[in-house]
Amino acid sequence: MDAFPLNLESHARRVALALAGAVALASAAATPAQAAMNFCAAPALQSSERTHADPGVKALVADAQAHLNDPPHALPQLRTAHAPPHPNADDASTVAEKDFELMRNAALAWRATGDDRYLKFVDRTLAAWVKTYQPSFNPIDETRLDGLILAYDMTGSALPVATRNATIAFLRKLANGYVADIDAQTRPLNSSFSNTLQSHRVKLIAMAAFTLDDRKLINVAQQLFIAQIGANIDKNGAPLDFAERDAMRDVTHDLQPLVMAALAARRHNRNWLRVKSPSGATLQGALDWLAPYATGDKTHEEFVPATAPSDPARSATGLPGFNGDWTPQDAAELFYLAARLDARYQPIALRLTPAPPPWLAVCLPLPAR
Image (tube, rainbow, N blue to C red; front, side, top):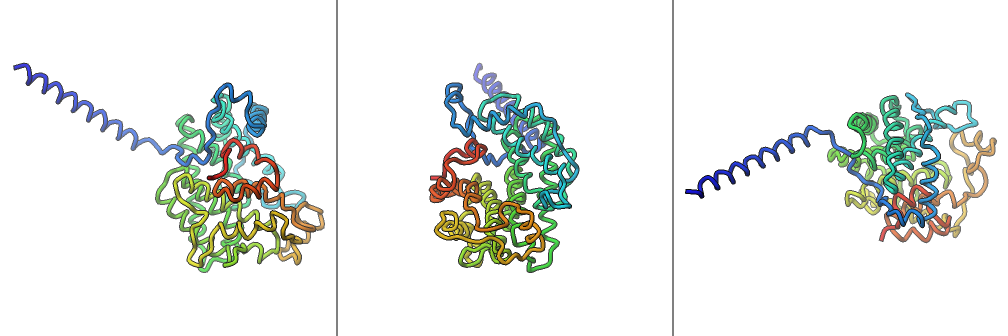
């Protein structure tokens, strides 16, 4: 006689658990997605490790701490495509976009130390930007938004709901706007939609897609990445920007956003370094093409002949990078980033400079295996 009540109780408990599970699933479905890319490994440091931390870690944390009380400089628009001293430069934009680097560094400092002061800085600055800024879909003006994306990627699950939801909406608007802009172009795409400008568009779309964990947008990003590899890199590995402007400076600026996109994809077990376009071109081929110039085995005189209308004016001002032989050290960050995709690039990076930028030393401290 006792068995029935026990079975009934067990059944009731199972029903209750099932209902609780259903409620949890419903709540999860109603809650906006949180950051999912996890671009940076950035493990937390133990107390004993902080004392003996890598110099790059110490430098980044010290820099983040120095800016903890800085107010946000959020603007509704950025205009940095032409840096000073050009007449159409916007000095306020140049100052304001530094917030993206500060957010990224503060997020890394929070991940490394667990100090909530850094998280509060990210929350305050991120909220100000995503509620104020209106994307222009100019990829050069907006390329440094990758710092904002990385800051959210590392902190999203710990941010207040209001900041998280506003950031999700902002990233969707940004990525979908760039996709719509590309879709609206006539085919075949002209050079401004296949040279370095397009590489920066693809980077922003890919990083937003992966941090949102939006499968449809991720697939679009991958298609755009492969199309850009095909349009941008020839069979020998030379990027279009080299053919258009005869400048290694522009080659570096072209490949670095593609490497950033590939690093975002790597966190989802997608190998964009070696993915082939229909023409057979790969990002790896372009990096291998650049490598002998980076090591100094080959040299190149920049912007001879100058092909863009702005190049002679920039050369006349004496701006670095627009006169004489290309300086291989300009590619140091590119090859440190590439080494996180393939360790073959680590010796080149070390030859260019003995340590990675502090943010990368914390974000991805070790090269790929």
